[in-house]
Length: 496
Image (spheres, rainbow, N blue to C red):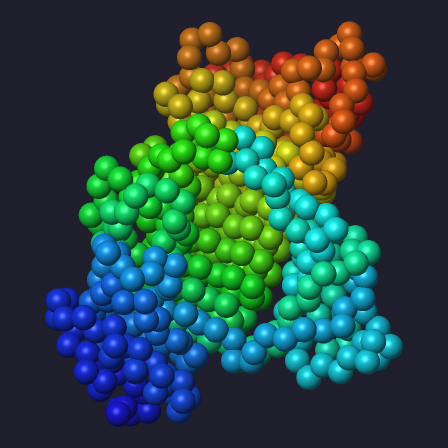
């Protein structure tokens, strides 16, 4: 059933002609490979067709898809939420007797708790005492229970940080971290787009990784057959509740933008992603590429929730969007397209040697309070506001008037460093007077009322803003903010 110590799809009945449904053969091949701990290799000249069945192939061994082609038909699928390939951990999820935790905690006394670990653990804790990420806007919601994910080592160290205080923990889920690396590489995948009703039924018919220490490399994904309607995509590349993952030298694709009615009862454009991450700790995107990064008919390609330690390096993507509190966010040696970089979160955010398009370099998401508890550094940035899209380009975009309870205190970055920023501002309107560093994020505050104005849920201002080298091609000086009352207590340091 295998050749030269590897498993093939053909040995289990795959035809590879691009027409015959090879799903069952692919599933059986991986079942055999997993049972015998053998790698899988495909015929480089084959085209495998994956039909509508909700029948995922479980990958637990190294897999080489070579230059093989795959056609994934998303029309009339059995279950839009079942991935074609899943990569699970070898061990089952369980629980641990985790005591109350505090923000920034780095150690647990495992001996006192009666815990003996044979492996480092990926751990998620929740507390229903506090609802957080209570979203504002057209997709408003009532939030989610407070949660954190972290790595607990065998000697009791907590890696990746604790974001919140936990006086009472409601649930604990834990799984041993797979120590052996697993590599999935190659393959050219074409998704025939769904034509379902345009509502929030996120399709996830791709590769779903929930195992730690997985690298997916040299996979090419594209989409065909999009019409004037369809459901959005959660991502072809999905990473959830795992650690130490990488997407390397892969090609991703943007999806056509559709509209629906949001929870506030008004029309809203639906986000549709090709890469999505949830609760991942330490994930790297290296050399990933996308075509048409300034095509405004295509939604931005990356979204995440509850992640920690995200790195983009040498990537070309239309958007990087970190919802729900990323901790430590780095983008370097990359190009970000028309939808830019959007985020809220914690820790250190660094953008270095990056070319940016769009209406801002960093957009702090207003629907989650525009909050970043930590520091922001932008270094060696070239910003080219997209013609016709950026009427009033703002380097750092935010909007929070302190009237909404997001479930946590909100703050702009404590210390902001802007170093060697070049703005190609030659495609802006004639009345343009210069790039704004900050948007007017709270118009209710004025110079006259700033000492007496009160807000129930205030947005904490930056402690310092340091500018070292800021050049606009137009020759116009940057404007710190149209409403300087907002930055009255911020120390502004300008170094030529």
